[in-house]
Length: 559
Image (cartoon, rainbow, N blue to C red; front, side, top):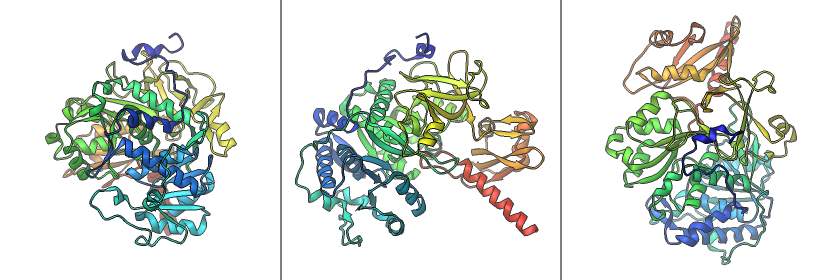
């Protein structure tokens, strides 16, 4: 307790340390398959698959992949949205000791090529809607195996696709035909140890090319247990009734842990939603009287509670626990969620920390704007941003370093990148935080997002918080831009609420009342939307790159 004083804030049922089972991740599927075999593992557009059938399909697909030559240690790319095929492919590959490489279905051929080359991927499991991109990829990348499905193939009453109907290339395999053609259904006999690589998760890539973080089976088991035991109030719902809304994509580490693997450990039915289309999500939520766990990101919460049918859904009674991550919740949004009576918690994590690390207690003290306290078995240091060695005094901003069972093994085949970010078990997160008198942590901003204007350090997140307070603003992002005089200057991108109008002067005047002069954005741009990552994180890098390209074009025209 002396070295981890924040543990005094843990909820009554959260352990100070956890005894993690030394099992491979895919063994979590045995829990619901043995105790609740006839319960729905997933609900997909009205079609259900039981835990018994899911495990049988996983084992059969594992034998089918082995028959194609997939072996322990091989990298298997999964390029699918949330659907039953993802669950089957994921646990099947892991059952063989293969390493799952998560791929965003929105990746271009160039981005997929980068992933293939960085990981040495030999197998790709994908779907019909991205076949034009996959065909481009295969002209430039060497893949031993390509397996294709149609997302609707696992919806009852919808005609199932075929290899011929999808006009697959010679040598490519059809997912369902491969599964149906395998008669072996027993558990694969491959020995997989906790320290073996389990998943390669590409980082967000907001400051350069994404890096392939290698997460072990032990990492993912630890993350699943930490998530489950921290959110212990969800156990108040009997296992027979437990559900989780699977809006977060499984190809992102956050959705992979807090939805898919959480569901296995907690015997929960996953309500699979393959895309974030707000009307479709609202329609789906309306069909379920209760949802035990609803992990989301702030942009999803904003869209949901701003929807015309939000009041009708009675979200305060429908949701057991809402969990927000991926990006900070604006204070204004937190107040709206609390007003609706929604039980929520907010946390922090990275791809390199298997999505978790720090969180607010469920029942205990919450501080608006804080990400909470470190989870069990986690240590932190907050060091000087410039030097990176000396710890800063309490209340001063510094870079967060973290040591935990959640911290990655390293970056795949990249010892230089690994050594730069991981030293003696301590991961440099790149996040600038402040630790208050109660040991609660507040993210000031990303180290690389910090703006230095006229010698002053400006943290864009602080500016965003003020912009979100404006009654007409729906979304906002502040970005540092090069400036000949000040070194950098601040530009704000604004999305207004539907039907609202505002001028640059309105926004600047609002900021002048709440910010020091050097923090006020020097230019404002109104947009219909902001570029976001797969889980709704605003991509400042894209905004910055667009502005720089625009400035370079203007200079070229002038000359």
